[in-house]
Length: 276
Ligand SMILES: C[S@@+](CC[C@H](N)C(=O)[O-])C[C@H]1O[C@@H](n2cnc3c(N)ncnc32)[C@H](O)[C@@H]1O
Image (cartoon, rainbow, N blue to C red; front, side, top):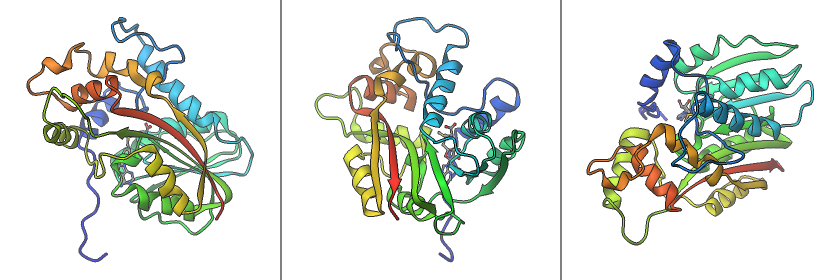
């Protein structure tokens, strides 16, 4: 729309990009996945978090069929963790990474396509995908949808660019408005999440809402897994205070730790089949 502002970039990426460039962070920008989740009180072993992040990516990539000649899109591709894993697992595949942040795409450029793969990187908004109808076999959005201007618009766009029988694979963080006593006012929690982890336009969304929004666009939910317990040990690294509720001025990590441990935050993995 003429005059409308481009979507905001997540501010926390300034830090992550610097950490990646100085060799202090890898390509994955998402929670870890533990097959056998340790308690939150367990000490973190060196390399454990990075291995758990790779495991989450590996689990996502495993949902995509390995057929040569496929065209795969990763929306909100971050620093290229999923693209890199797809490049290792697939052959003769066209990989397309999309992001609104050119700096992240520049980091993805160092991925060297192997075994007949091709890689292209596109700067665009997830809610306005610059592709024709029915181009892709698989579309990924790993831990990114909550940032997009509207999940509903992204789901409609993903449905439009997928071929009939194509697959959309996503993970999403779903927050439920807390009920009962909370350590901080709900409005303050929302403000802190938006300040530290924003943009996050629609904060309170249920899994059922996602499924019905996708259905409206002709996407049928075929995979629906709750990864909340498997991802919970992440807070041992990103928000290690065992009693975040003691903090008078929490950051979003502390708020998330409290919401996740109290069942108000779920980490959901969903797969959809395109009937369009
Ligand atoms: C939490 S990171 C996840 C990155 C990556 N998928 C991963 O798992 O490592 C969210 C990503 O979504 C991207 N993003 C945010 N808003 C976007 C938008 N409107 N369109 C496209 N990408 C967007 C961010 O720049 C960032 O790369």
